[in-house]
Length: 330
Image (cartoon, rainbow, N blue to C red; front, side, top):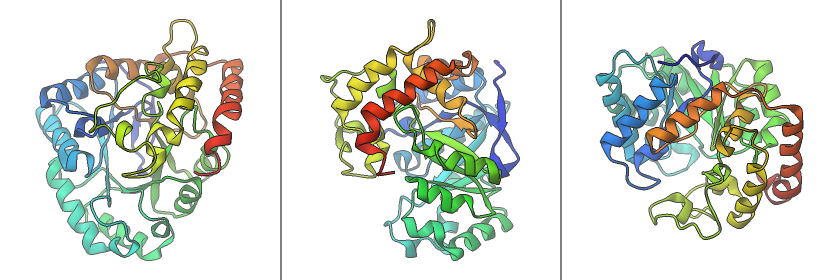
């Protein structure tokens, strides 16, 4: 088993690998994944040094959580910290974010994951008003007091939401979209998190695969893949799909990004390496649908730090091609 760099996940006090394993894909929302293949992906991640899984109660309507629960039961030697999320199975109204609902959602996730206490539960991109509610944080504190969760956190869409959550003393970490096509969190969110001792989990690190350089203008995605049905935010926030970038723009910009990859590194590995070395980032959580992808993602942790010239080139690409389109939205 490979040893990977570990960083403390904010106020949880727990160390996690700098490359984690996102498991949205394993729920089936990116196309069908067989159970045996899902277990093989998790195994490959763990064998490659990953100690952090991220999931949610809506990924495959709980399938992702259940797969992780069965995997950990079968692999008790795998020391993996699991963060899940709650809230998106209910109608997205602030009044639904109350203690009784939290308990119900927690009970389902605890059963799915096969644990009495959840390592970390994150509010799953709730309505903006939820982040500023004293009652919500009081309810989350109660979950900790009751032993249902060891710690709580938030997953956000916007930098403003992140900053509101970071100011709360009980928030352990913030999950936010961060990649070479989404640089806005670097301006205020990451510095504020460092100052407050809050962890940062970087999601959508490859801009839904754009930064892998594998897609063209003619690529066709399966109908059940969110990259087909949510390009304009039809089902959930547009930023979750291709980081909110117009697909044609993204493909063209991704070709420019691919040319920045150092010798011996893939575009995807370069994108992950870029995220890992941003001050304040605790872990980046790429997804994977194959053993090869899981291993390649983990290998980014061992790549040499990108030189300043590459960092400057990423900034220039963002300012020219991406910033005019999306910077003000999130």
